[in-house]
Amino acid sequence: MAAATHSSKKSIVILGGSYGGMSIAHYVLKHAIPVLPEKDSYQVVLISSSSQAMCRPACPRALISDDMFPQEKLFVSIPKQFSQYSEGSFRFIHGTATAVDHENRIVSVSSATGQTEALEFHALVVATGASTPSPLLGLNRDEKFLRDAWTEFRKGLATVKSIVIAGGGPAGIETAGELGEYLNGRAGMLSSKLENPKVSITVVTAGPNILPALRPALAAKAEQYLAKVGVIVVKDTRVKSVDPPNAGADIEHLTTKAAVTLSDGKTLQTDIFIPATGMTPNTSFLAKDLLNAHNQVETNPSTLRVDKAGPRIYAIGDASSYARPAVHNLLAAVPTLGANIKRDLLLASGKMESEVGEEKVFKEDKRETQMVPIGKSKGVGAAMGWRLPSWMVWMIKGRDYWLWTTGGLWSGKQWAKEA
Image 1 (cartoon, rainbow, N blue to C red):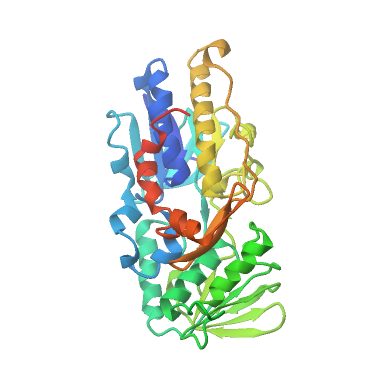
Image 2 (tube, rainbow, N blue to C red):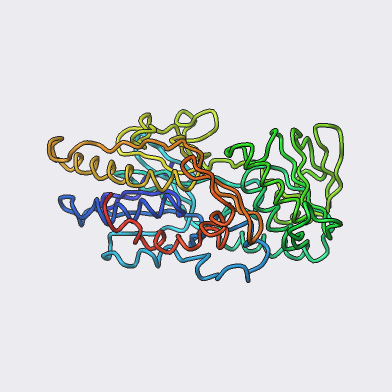
C-alpha cells in the first residue's frame, strides 16, 4: 500500500454513495461535526464508484424504458446534494476503494480518472453495498454502465419471444411482473391466467415458494398475479448451467440466446436469460478476517461497529452482517450508527464518558416486512407482520418503486432531525 496522503483535516471516510453512505454522510455533517471541538478540523470524504445516486429498487421497471420514470429524479448528482455544507467540510471522490489497512488506518482509492490515492482516516464507514448478478438490476459500476446495459437490453426486447429469469426473490419476481405486463398485457378480471402470451416468460426458483421472506399465502397470490401477465413459475428447481455461461451476466451478452439447463434435467431455450439469484457483497478490498462466511463485514448488530477492525470503524447496508439486507433495515439503522459515530468522535476529541451519554443500540425488526409490486397495478406484501392489500402495495411502492421517498434521502432532509 502506498504512503498515505497527509491531510490537515481528520477524515471521516465513507465508502459507498447509495442509501447507507449518503445517509451517514448527511447525518455526520448535520449532527456530529457541528458539536465537535475544533469542528473545522474534520472533513467527510465520500468515495463512490458512481458520481450519481439512483433508486435501485426501481430497476425492474426502469430497465424497460426511460419513459417509465423522470430521469432527473431516478438519477441525482452526489456532489450537488452536499453543496449545502460549508466549504472544506465535504469532499467527494469518484472512485473505488481498492484496499483498507485497518491497523494503520489507511484506505487506498483508484479514481475514475485512473489516479491512485492513499487516505488516512480518523473514522471509516463501509457502505459499499452489493453487486447484482445481472448488470440490469443495480449500480454494479457507475451510472453510464447501467444506462448502457439498459440500452442493449431494450434492443433485444423488440423481437424477444422467450425470457427465463433465475431467482424467485423480489428482484426476479418484480422483473418478471414488469416485463410480463409490458410485453403481454394483463388478462381480464374473469381469467385466471393470460392465454397465449406474446412472450413466454419463465421464473425458476430453487425454493418451494417464490418470495421466501413472505408467508406462503402471499407467495401463492403473487403467482396468481404473475399468471395474469403470462409468467410461469417453476419451483423446487435450480438453474444448473447456462450455455453460453456469460449469457445475461455481462453487457455484451444481455440478449444472447441461451440454453438453460435445470436441476431436473430439462433444458429451456430462451432469447434472453436474466440471473436474479441474490447479490455479492462489495467487500473484496477488505481483509478476510473482517468478513463472515458470506463475505459480509462482520458487524456488531447492536452498535454497527466493526469490533475486530479497531476504533471508529463501522459498516451498514448490504455489505454488512448487522441485519437482513433490506432498505427498511438500513434506514432504521442510520440514526444508531450516526449517534455512535458522534459519540465516538466526541470521546476521541477528549470528552469524558459522562459528557457524551449512552451509546445507541440498534434492534432489527424481524417481523414480516416486504412489498413486491407485480406490474403497474398489483402487488403483494406485509409490513411489521401485517398483510397488506394489493392496492396498498401499489400505493406505497408499486406506483414508482419508492422514487417518492428518495428526494429527501439524497438531499439529507430526511435526516434533518437527530433521532
